[in-house]
Image (tube, rainbow, N blue to C red):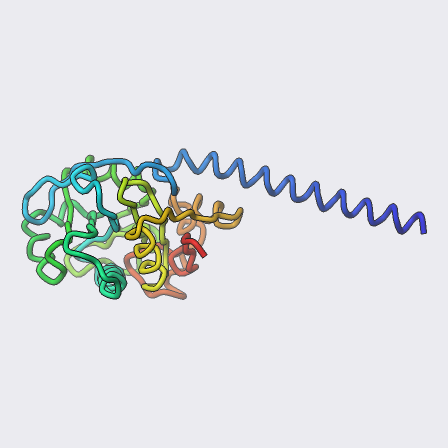
Length: 259
């Protein structure tokens, strides 16, 4: 009997030590995560100033006081980027949003081809109040870095080049900012219109959306933000997604939104 009791105590202690180790690893990863990008859920979003399809300068400060839906695409993307934009439009269409009640910002990951003139033509297919932004390559790249967007032209994981020369592999992400420009949540990979609609709906009525993140999600986001996961498994995209645009991790359906 005494031996049984000793074994139970041993396994309880061993289990506690394991939990402590896991917690320590999660904390270490979350600290390291901060070095991959400046954008963190619950923190003030990094401001930027780029040019929209009308040739006007747009910054987050200009849009202060209203929620913002921010995403990253390129106009020559043959498949997933248009789907991302369609999902955003569908999610917002299901909400009762007053005029100018929310801003949608679409930052290019291909500033060389996505000129103001090209964006003006492209924007004709989307709501008139959306901002499609571009700028000098270095300036746009700084925004990618701030929001954890990994961009790679003709990179590992690209299945084929776009029709006119090259494709762009990039992080698929939607970032929702509240009225005070704090990051409410991030949706990564294959999120649903319901998820985005729920988050935006909460932000519109002034609720603070708190993102719950466990060790697995922290680790996945670390790989995603630093552009590691699609290098580790470059074949996943071709096997599961048939996407020339987003890297392989987008097939894993990681979605960092409140449950």
